[in-house]
Each structure stands twice: as structure tokens, then as C-alpha cells.
Image 1: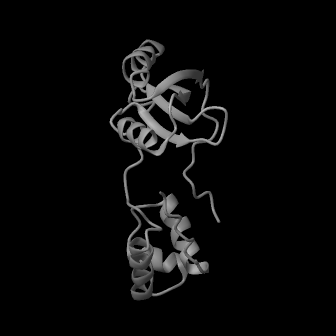
Image 2: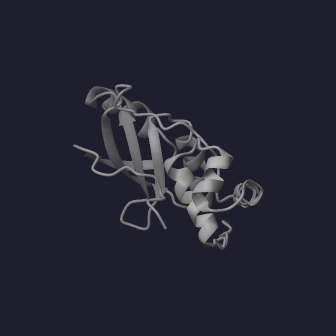
Length: 160
């Protein structure tokens, strides 16, 4: 059973904080306060609230996978042989252990999951598919779509 969380209400300052941090995650509190038009203390309090409410889930470095030689991207449709809750839970736990799976989404479609898989090459992808993805619990079949070019890969905040 999943619990749906309600959306947090954001005002204009909260939205501005999120937009600035989405573009410049390492900005100082003083610079952030100046950019949104508040003093340092209320800005810091708002930031802490956004973190504690789970709106901001963390901070991390954005790494260019192409510079690391990981420029092969494939999207994989996965059909499961069992979609009862226990099977979904087992599959969900297993996919988190495959580092080449960059994203995984349960779908309301003619297939059950859509995976974004990033590897160094088609040869590496074929190995991941054959040895890792196909052997995940309850996988009945897969279909692969290879991306030729990433046109847009921004995060979720292109601006509110």
C-alpha cells in the first residue's frame, strides 16, 4: 500500500529559493537571501523548512556522464510475469542494485516498467540486458529503444 503525500504550499519566496538552488546549488545563504529579496535569517528558516518538509531532498554534484565515457543510453520497456504487490516489491528492490539503471518508472501502459539505462557502448548494454536486467525477478520480456541524442535533460525545475 502506498501513501500519497500532499503537495506543500509554496509562496513566491519559496519558489524563488527553489529556482535559484536548482540552477546554483552551491550559492551561499547571503547570496541566496540577496537574490530573493529577504534577509539572511528568514531565508535560512525557509530553506530549513523546505528541507524538513522534503521539498528539497538533497544536494549533489551534477556529473557529465558523456565526459565519463557513458554516452550510450537505452530505454527499456519491461513486462513482468506477475504484477501482484509482492512481485513488484521484489522487482523494485532488485533494480536499485543495478548501477547502470539510471531511472526506473512503473508505468500505466501495455508494459510495466520503463528503465533508463546508461552504459559505455552497445556491447556493454547488451551485457547489462542479458546478465542483469533479464535476470531480475519476474521479468517476462523486454524491448529496447536506443537514444541517438539527448535533446533536453534538465531537472524537474525548469521554473515554476
